[in-house]
Image 1: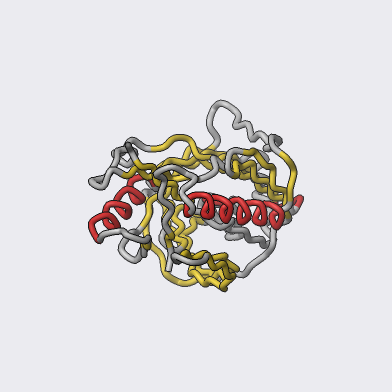
Image 2 (image 1 turned 90 degrees about the vertical axis):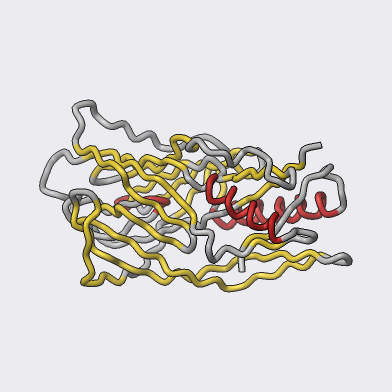
Length: 280
């Protein structure tokens, strides 16, 4: 029987805010296409009875499934971030150990409107649709003097040290332990002032120009195409589906469901599904 391994990688919402002056143009809008990837070199994959070969297979499948395509629709006031398609890969095929990796992103659609201090995220949490409504917390980017080229654009490097609370779970033969730890990651953004919108991938914003590359922990988002002021008007639809919850409520629901799932599979109720831990 084929074994299925369910991997839930939760990329934290990256929220920021600064005052951004509108461009003098009456109309300025566009669509940016991004591709995501994961650095597996520093990724620690742990699980009971997992051989080194099995761990390496998991890392490779995670890297393959992390390669996805997104679009960012934007104008001077708002932006919409959406996963368009999963790139073709062999990640869905079972590994040598007969396991299959499923990489869940929740199919999230994110909407940002800085002028209204509004963030909306339409996402799926363990099969149920939710609409997360939140404000846009501010943080201070550190803009450097370092520059480089991405395509035809000159981009400037900015950094931010993100400190968040993360829940970790460990399993032993006798008990399950859950604890909350402080996690610190460095976000590196490369933005171009030539595109005067304060937006970026994966819910980032707050810089004086479009972010074309973002590195957050093991994840990288790289812009591969930008179309400015296309002939057909760009429609930005505000997410509206799902049960309305706050960010804290959504995190609580996700954590509770994760604990339920781990208990279920650890006691054998999930058939031959194996749950592993990813992280430090």
